[in-house]
Image (cartoon, rainbow, N blue to C red; front, side, top):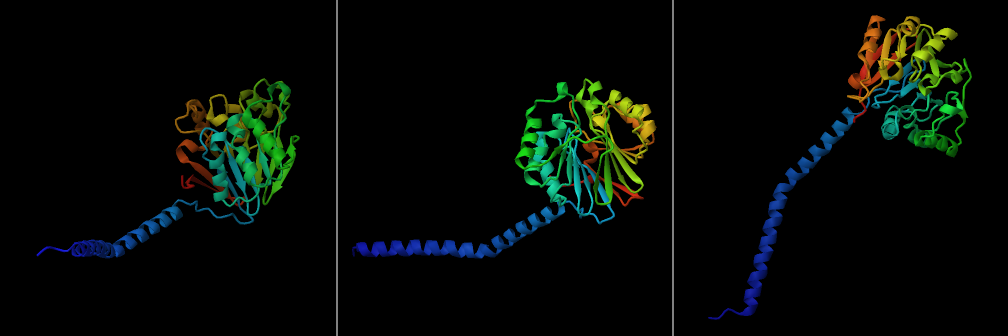
Length: 320
């Protein structure tokens, strides 16, 4: 008996319908597993995100937090109290958004001041995104002789960004101060016209919070250190941000004898091309009785003080 054409089509449709239904049944059987797998992936992602967030909370009104930030071969130091923050230097341009992420992770919503120790690219370049994204009350630069004023793009971009956002640009006089929360910054500077190197034009900053103090001066080298010594500007400081990334041309014996730091923090990139920090510099710091921290080994370093005690904490993580 011949099979009718309509019957063939009917059988074919039933076959495909059963095939689709079978595929859907198999998918429904796997659905609980797929949902559970998705939930596990989401939960793991949330836990990982929580674990990689910085654990630091905004300090209370009597506490100063000093972050020597790990931004590679450059300098950036954040000074933070409960409702105030000051940034000293910003690393190079490639680190700008990394620096911005760090500041936002630390709940920095505005900056009382941004201080550039001297306008070399590895100290000024990363400031542009910060000035673009975070309100800044004032931007400070050292007094640079005309012959040494850089014409590099990073320095020009920072000045243009400050102008765009109507941020006042100031050159502080020696012993001018900026107060923020429980802390104060005193600017220290000598006549920079005597120098032929921009490093020695670095602006000195002495930060005090009660009995605890910190001294930092960008990339100051031997000639600059001698000028600071002769001017009588160097006093004992609890923390020294080691100048020029720990090069052999900085942190001489006479300088360390005057500053007498308990802690020394070196900002330098891992396996950098300059050999920073120099072994001789490290030896001088140890001989001076310093406990030495360095960002290439210890990542971001946090010093927390209430004005009488101080607690160092290396390996502060920002999740990248």
